[in-house]
Amino acid sequence: MIAFIDDHRGVYGVEPICRVLPIDPLAYHVHVARRDDLAKALPRARRDLVLMEGIR
Image 1 (cartoon, rainbow, N blue to C red):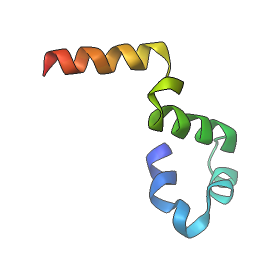
Image 2 (image 1 turned 180 degrees about the vertical axis):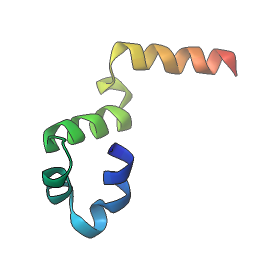
Image 3 (image 1 turned 45 degrees about the vertical axis):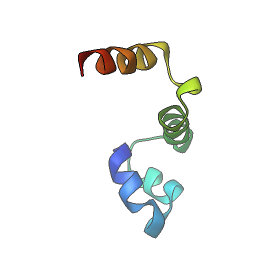
């Protein structure tokens, strides 16, 4: 659902899309903030990034 909102938010806006989909707009915004700022990411997500770099 996050990818769908990302793809269509420019046309429809986040809040109208979230009214139709079963997702809270705040949850979307928190997810985007965590995705865009590593300091806000959950510990597991940070650890996964480190492990993925090691695997590469």
